[in-house]
Length: 80
Image: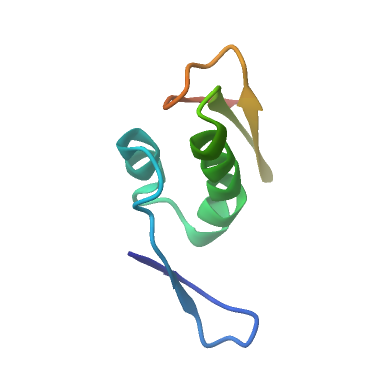
């Protein structure tokens, strides 16, 4: 279970067992900001089970979105 800071600074635990195994593996070892950016889109994908996720890694930011060209349960990452 990952632990992230809460609004009060005390922190809260986030269970990742609601995500497909491939999504959990994708987040392993990523820094906190990356996870906080990408995880909501992975959860959205897991909820609708229609599309996978495309992650675009730019020099100073990360973007993630559902992509109908990516199969559900898969993550396609590209960098520029």
